[in-house]
Image (cartoon, rainbow, N blue to C red; front, side, top):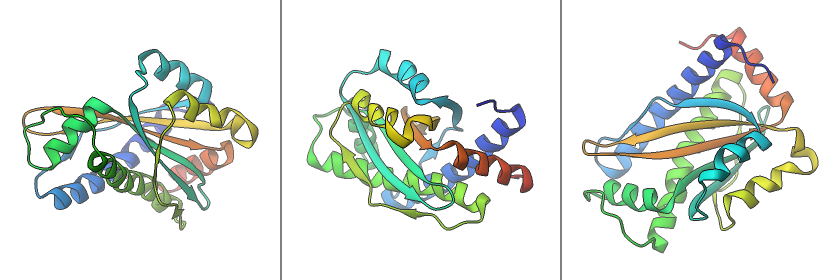
Length: 202
């Protein structure tokens, strides 16, 4: 799919608004200021996404998945390696960013972080589409990232595209990287770009 520079800029700005809301929610949740770096957005086929992610995958990635339905329908994933997750949870709970073995609490925190980020992300897209979007309860994926993405290479999702969003959680002493992947069909993506063109984002 060909995306114009104007579409790319508008989509990035739209996602940035959603991430600002997510950062504000996280800040209230943990009682300290949390910033999210301006996102970098790429539109890729699922095969292109696998080619980009798999060479650096360690098998220790933590993935939260949330399904959404409406005019814009698809699947969203929050992806973070276990080391980054342990540091992020420590920072969010008032620590100095110390690494530790992943516990059940860390997994629960990852699901909650995913719920906040993915809802803000998808919600901002729903706002521009002026449509109601419903969300499933976010779930922790127990499979490696290659297997998770492989599920979207068959059946109806075979022709889907992905929006890969890279961002960083910014703290005074360090930053932690994370990825959000939005998997949508071509029709949903076209609807989104039509809406962005009709209602410019400011």
